[in-house]
Length: 66
Image 1 (cartoon, helix red, strand yellow):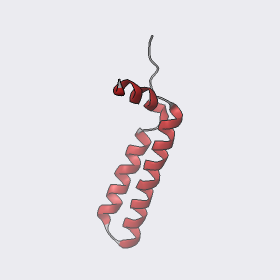
Image 2 (image 1 turned 180 degrees about the vertical axis):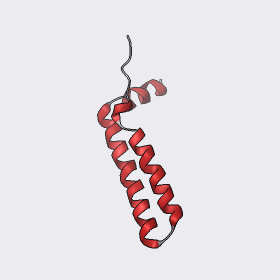
Image 3 (image 1 turned 90 degrees about the horizontal axis):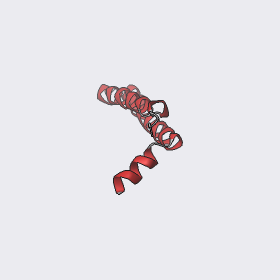
């Protein structure tokens, strides 16, 4: 029951776009902090988080065959 509700909620393009944007902004903030402070671990983590945010976008939604 809960799994079906979450999958319906997650399959909406607007929801996925908002979450992807938030994840990308967090990744950019991590990367910027890493560059400015000289902590390259944060820079690499920011690059990875930006990539994950790009993968979460609504272009990844596949239509159901019903």
